[in-house]
Length: 254
Image (cartoon, rainbow, N blue to C red):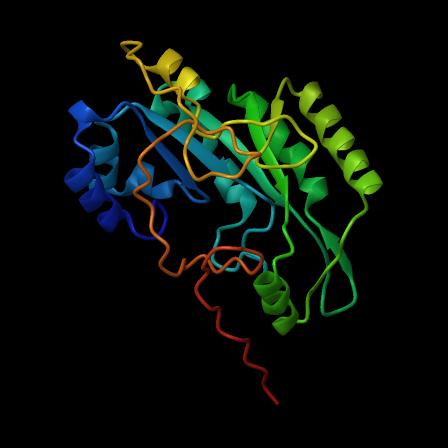
């Protein structure tokens, strides 16, 4: 909503989230540019204590994330974003998901090698937390990828452990703590963390510590009001388990 529907987000916040009744506004986005440049959204969100989950996977502007800007452009927004929210502790990166694919050309592809660049930039801007996950091979996701000639590659539990160790080692070099977002085998973590949000609140106002209802067992999030929606997302990420908008097939000239 931040990237693609800023006006609708402003309307929802005005209607459902009066600032005096809202502890913290938690936003997920792959492109926070509108928080910095869209006048009404910037004004609206400035009324709340903010916490931002900023997803950078290294796949922007590829067939896998066709309408997400290149990750280099998004990394360049870290400095103004931290300045806007007022505290680097209010920004958590998401390297989510890690993917393994065989492309239509037969080439093997993974975004894993991008993580070190993301971690290095995070450290420069005082960001010390990053959520990670691996792509889930839902049937509809596999079917969608195969329509583009892409085949997901499953990895063994041993290979997964090696990758987790690799990511953890890189993260530790840059003073970053990794959080598995509903990743079996990793400690349960919280994307919405009432205790943390209470600590970050300018007046230390109490925040609910109750576990959110209806979440997966591996999700430790505390309760919140979800004002997101599930209309087709124009980012068109082909690996997404939610509802990406269809991406037009490429035109081949003869």
